[in-house]
Image (cartoon, rainbow, N blue to C red; front, side, top):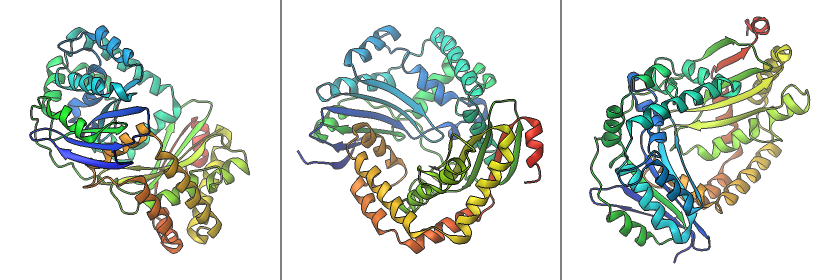
Length: 415
């Protein structure tokens, strides 16, 4: 068995299959990825992909919801799913001797989902409770509002959960039709990482019956907005979000972006962490992150502060960004960011589940490269190229969203 190799095979009239072989591990992680997310939904369908994420765990033609739960529990690993703006994934992590059982269960859930009407009516209430939980979590709520303003009148700005109105309009027939139309090849990708043979995986997947789905459609291009969005909201903390242009999911600039983010707000030694938290005690949470999609990307700063210190916190964040633009990145920061990123990449090589999830990037580019490739690219980033990359992006007018009590928002209305 070859160590740490990524292989792929196209099943005739079926899905693309990828594997990352890790023969020394005791486990296997499996994922069924669907190239579909909330941005692909029509307004009246908002939340349908997330609803199906829930409903595929509610039984199949052979096993009701309770029997399916027992089957998943008996394997003793983990079974979960997620829905994002461009992707849906159902995944499991099990002992290596059980990977065939896990694959069969995931296949049954996807290809023979029961979606009982009574379960949908009940699970819809669960999703309503999930919506309420987001409403009560200020940092999640403000990000949802920020995305709607960042991509106005575009599906990227819609909530992944949908709305109560859109979910109330969805029937079992809508769910089944969406599942059978879209959760099939050519939108389907099956990925595995860990202790297994690629040939055995391909043989098992080939033995399944794969009905075809609808052809992929082009996604509507997205343009980011800028400006200031003030959201009056009574809370113990004010929330702050800045978004600048980032990178796309398949960008060759990923290594530069990773280093830039480490320096700006991705670590305890970052500019924002030092200036906002360590020097002034303005926030418990302050940081930045990159979020990449197929055709756009954001570089986002998030933080929370006491409402009476909101104006000061925003000014410090702006001053920190301006200082990076004007005076650039220090050589020591560049070297430290390279070291931190190398550690993260190398540690990630040991993660069975992480390697499986990385294979899902195959939807965005013609080849999934091993972490060792990206490690070399990080080492090759030039100091001057990083300086230019940072200055270009941070010089663009961002969208700034702030939520907090009205009396505190009025103090920064002139920003």
